[in-house]
Image (cartoon, rainbow, N blue to C red; front, top):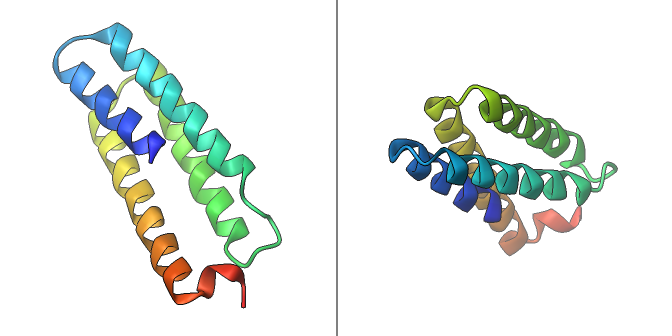
Length: 99
């Protein structure tokens, strides 16, 4: 997922003191999360929950743009990875179609 890859690069950049790269990757991650939010069908059974989670992730990333918090970024990566795994499992079992 683009968002988690960008967040991982932001953590790497922070550990190595590269503030320009960190900022660029946070912008990339935020754009990816906003694209995910835009693609959510609000009437789907998972829609409201996904919108809430993606909104929270977006807020964390926005805060980290001005006050970087590596722990919050790591938790956001975990949350997004968990969502991806759950959606993948649901798609494989046919649950993601709303049937």
